[in-house]
Length: 212
Image 1 (spheres, rainbow, N blue to C red):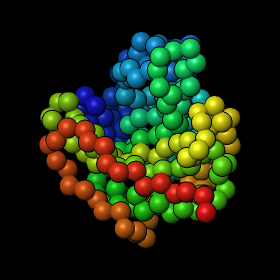
Image 2: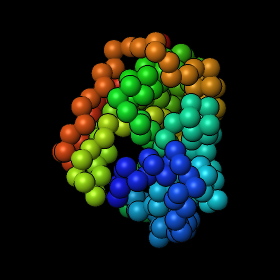
Image 3: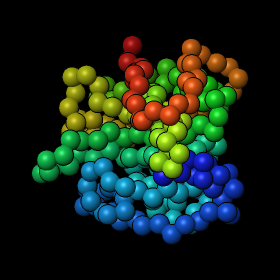
Image 4: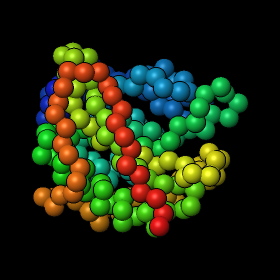
């Protein structure tokens, strides 16, 4: 991200920052600055921006709404998932990325996500599993990194991408319901809050809940 501090400030004080944004949609449903499939730059918005809803891919909007409206969190990334038939591109999963404001919020959100993921595991279609991922987001302006949390719906072992995409909308509804039954609170779990460092983006392990 170009400037994490500015993005967070604009989120919590939206009247101070409403930049012009470039929104183009690819033939495969990707919304980014160039309107092409695959991973490309997308402008950073907050919910007060008039283009906010247009900037979120339809399939992931309910997950983003649960994070931003119900949990009052900051999201830094989202994707509805794309299959890319006919293109030499790997499929992408449905996900939403959360940028906690501080270490306390990180710990509370991580714990709440773990509780929600555990609660919904047995309600998901067999083709889909939900995972909570830890990563670090690098600020291009300062070089510092911030710990982030990613909630992703992934194909279950033994199931292919076509079956996943047939079931992912039903799985999304179940996950959204689980999120709305939870809230980040002081009730914790074993998820540690990592220190902010100056390293580059580093993917951490994924903690997945599997159907029992």
